Image (tube, rainbow, N blue to C red; front, side, top):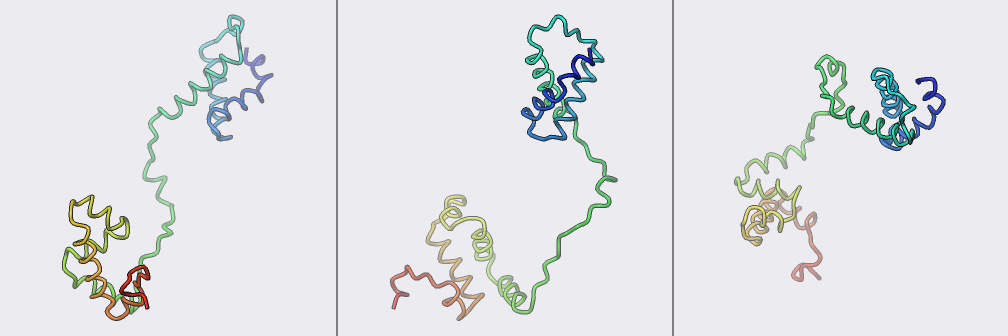
Length: 163
């Protein structure tokens, strides 16, 4: 039976690749298909459409592969190299961080949130007035940057800032 199946091995591997889109995984599930067909002594004589049957077996092997519990032992991670560098601010950045830490709690939160969300999204998420959030965030940034605020955060769309 396996000899008869192995004659069409490239075709089975193509089918497996169509299912999983990964060559190595396709090879694995094709090999598992051979093992299971041999283990259960499947008779190919009774099968009317061999291609459909093999496709179904490969699909089941693919599903079974992902149902297995995927656990990783800590010893496998022991030799992984950490590529992250710790953030070490220079003097200017440290000065900004120190000023940020002296702000009121609300201003700190609004500025921190503004890195991930727009002011409108913050207002909707926390059910707070948009104008209040914008005002507090802007005042906090002015306290941090001082005179540099106008040059760094100048919005040319604002009429009062146009020349």
